[in-house]
Amino acid sequence: MAFRKCYRARGHLSEPTLTVVALLVAGYLLLAVEAFVIPGFGVPGIAGLLSLGAGCYLAYQEFGPALGTFTIVLVLGSITAAMWWLPKTRFGRNVVHSSTLATAKAAETALEPGELGVTESDLRPAGLARFGELRQSVVTEGEFIDTQTRVVVTEVRGSRVVVEAAATENED
Image 1: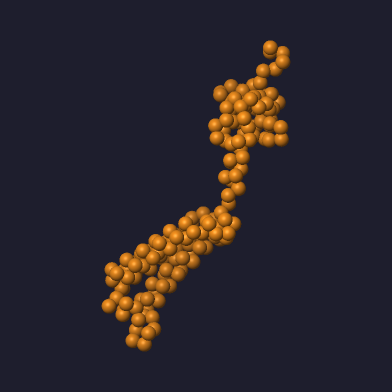
Image 2: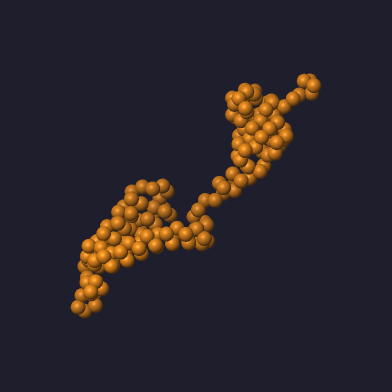
């Protein structure tokens, strides 16, 4: 009986059906604009969610619990499937910026305890030091170290590099 409400006598879609379909399509298009064109979560994203919600609500009101629930499951399932499937496609990999993760991973493994470097800024207690060609943000355990002072890496915790002033030949 609910399926009969979707069609008129000659097989044309009824006005409520067209309204539901239009709201759902508009919602998906607005979410796509938000995801691929406009960064962040703003007006198109909120409007897309409201449009999808209105389409589901109208489907529930016009066609009853069976088709209303089917519409809700279809919308939630399609969004979940898109979030799962899209990053695995070539298009999805091009859209998602992943070099930040590779850079962070490289920074984690670039330095080892015992490596020597020279500070490029005052460490109070954080600053910059150069280890060969690598310029790295470093921290001390609380002491201040002046610019152009030799430092040694004492600890590496993820991307956090802890240094201390290196002993000079005159201090032996």
